[in-house]
Amino acid sequence: MELAAAKLKFIEAWGKLGSEWGINRTMAQVHALLLISPEALTTEEIMETLSISRGNANMTLRDLIGWGLIEKQHKAGERKEYFFADKDVWNIARQVAKERKKRELEPVLKVLNELSTVTGDEKDPAFKTFKKSVADINKLAGNVDKTLETMLKAEESWFWGSVLKVFK
Image (tube, rainbow, N blue to C red; front, side):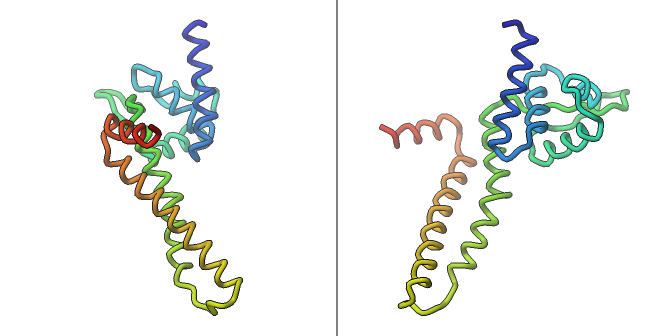
């Protein structure tokens, strides 16, 4: 496989993977393009390479900056904005975990904590089932939160060494 074909295949695959992270396909494809580009790219270069509109490119770049996955830079003497992505996959994984925690897990934890204060008749099977289900889900979500916090604070080698010990 030649480099050009490999790049396109990577961009497509990263696009599919991104949707599993909660990032839309175009966002993931732009991120993939910036990951494999040795130099920062302009909006126009991204639009041309991925055949997307200016509006889609601008919105996608803003979203990627919001996720902390890319950064914008200016070059002296030029009016164009350039975009680049951190190439360290551990940093990318931690950033995605951080954003998903903030956008998905924290709101769920807040609701579960509110629901855990529900009052009712302890003898009522519906109340007992509700209370137990909420408590169990809250405990699981809390453990996921602690695991993500550990990952976010950890160095890559320590984290994977710890994970592998669990499976031995």
